[in-house]
Amino acid sequence: DAKTTQPPSMDCAEGRAANLPCNHSTISGNEYVYWYRQIHSQGPQYIIHGLKNNETNEMASLIITEDRKSSTLILPHATLRDTAVYYCIGRSYNTDKLIFGTGTRLQVFP
Amino acid sequence: GAGVSQSPSNKVTEKGKDVELRCDPISGHTALYWYRQRLGQGLEFLIYFQGNSAPDKSGLPSDRFSAERTGESVSTLTIQRTQQEDSAVYLCASSPNYSKHYEQYFGPGTRLTVT
Image 1 (tube, rainbow over the protein chains, first blue to last red):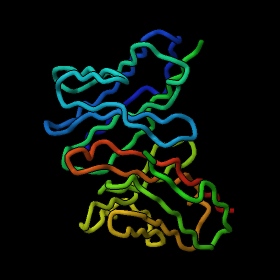
Image 2: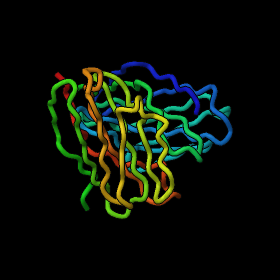
Image 3: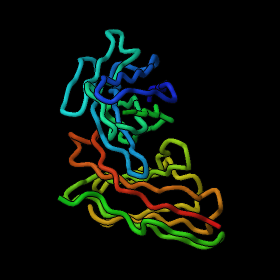
Image 4: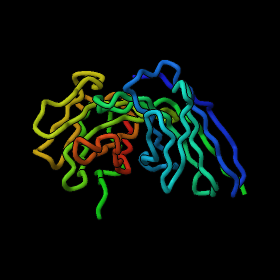
């Protein structure tokens, strides 16, 4: 599974877009990029995943660079409830276990 | 519908005692996972069950740790002769059929404190 690197913390003003970067330079061709988040004292929550095309759902957008060595999770209009630790995970489609790093702690402020 | 539930929510035990943690997955989910999260750290994979296949135990840290699952329902994680380094939140997750195995639904966790 690809090793991922994320900044330990970020701040974002409420209502602004939060852009969370992730480097995964060792990702291989069949490895997907997954994002989960963990709000304090809760279990992680799935957000989005992608392989090489940009993806969007009701929670977020995922932008993957053409060389697939990095990606950005975008929360278009951050709210205080988006304050959480965000994990970027690289995983082969045939591997069922998620390998979590230490993630990015996003603090949304009023 | 009901999500993944875990019990107990908190467990305090003395060093050397055995503990049993329970996970009730979402009904119909074939895959079930156990993770451990130490304070301020990311999640560590422990074990994975998928249907009737042999479980993937590659993440269990020692032979004091074991887990069972009855069919596609309840799972129990057992820690024997607990040590202080076992103190952590133990998270269970379940996942629907194989084609959507990337989306794991997590329970609230069991906070284990070994004194």
